[in-house]
Amino acid sequence: MAIYNIGGSEVKGDASEAMSELPQNRTLMVEKLTKEPPIKPEVIEGLKSIEEVFEHFSPSVEMEFHDSEGGSRKETLRFKNLGDFGVKGITGQSEFLKTLTAQKEQNQKIIKQLKTNKLLQKALENEEYKTALLNAINSLIKELQENK
Image (tube, rainbow, N blue to C red; front, side, top):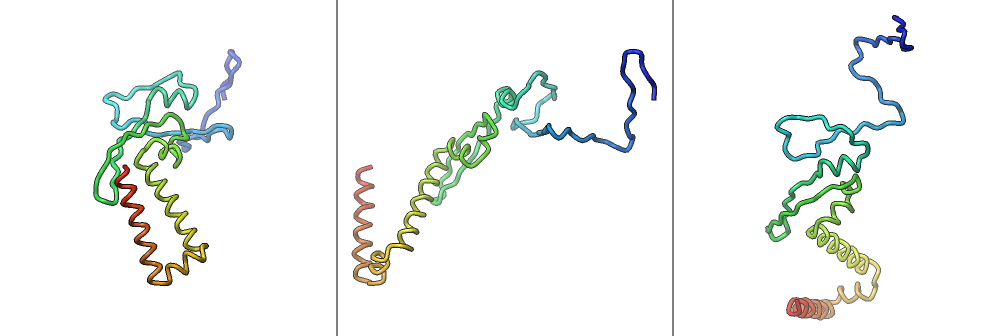
């Protein structure tokens, strides 16, 4: 090992080691933040936080959603922080996904009612009551569609 006058010492690394470990208080994130690869890759310096990286690259993605009737809908999702990649972040940006979430919640409420409401269970067992209930529900649906 050579000693230098500046005050440093040369530390030779092991030649077989291709990568060094990150310190335990650091995290390395590698992610593609643009849709298309750059024509000429460049090194971006001076970005000190994740927020600055998101602000610089402004990542976004075009999504095409398909509904149960076969229709499609395009939406652009934009990511401004790591939270935008979670379920709430993505759903909060998409009207289509908000609608699906609302439908899911309504279906869960109906299922809960079907499982716990004894009066409703008895009504569904009797064919006459079941028909009357279906007629009432269909009337409500028709009224809602007319008032849209």
